Image 1 (cartoon, rainbow, N blue to C red):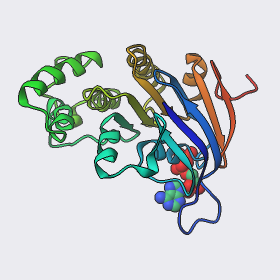
Image 2 (image 1 turned 30 degrees about the horizontal axis):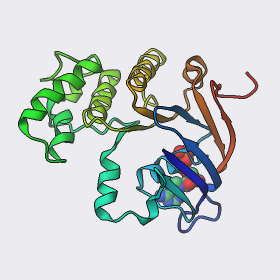
Image 3 (image 1 turned 90 degrees about the vertical axis):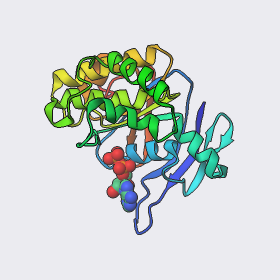
Image 4 (image 1 turned 180 degrees about the horizontal axis):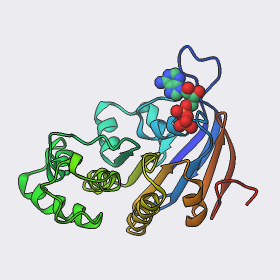
Length: 229
Ligand code: ADP
């Protein structure tokens, strides 16, 4: 579904590339961890898949189509197929849990009827039924991230892209959230997660793509965070 072919990414003003010739393929329905030290290029890879950044050379194909050739309408369509989850949750503080999730549908023009059906279903899936009227500040970090995940899945995305989704959470919450991602993946959604949470990665036995200084150094099915395990 996604093919990344010999992608290099050099940000302007930077001497060393963020990605220095990375190739990989991700099939529909896969669960992929992107691991590696800070600055390895994980976020950049996620941004390239989301088409928030363009490669300096090489190509990112989505179902055989070069994403660099996407016109504005295709770009919007592409992004609508993706659900993004962020380390810092990025919830709207003045909106309730329901409104935060509903907002993702409002901006793509969904009707109030669709919103009334889909938002409670998404909140139910992430274990937040009953919290609709709460504000983000009234929730724990783990719960706030569940709202972030509900907001991502409510659009029925093809792909969930998560950049350090458990970076602000303790170990127990991290595990529970990764289990939630796994359940979402079992429903057919492709899941791509950049993470430092090595204990969680090792426990899950999913595909692990390891980056270091912009290079892909390992790509393993049922992998672990470090290859010495
Ligand atoms: P990771 O997610 O693995 O921490 P990143 O993809 O964020 O890595 O960063 C890879 C490299 O690219 C780092 O050296 C970082 O400083 C640089 N970088 C990332 N984003 C930008 C940007 N917008 N402008 C300039 N350099 C950037």
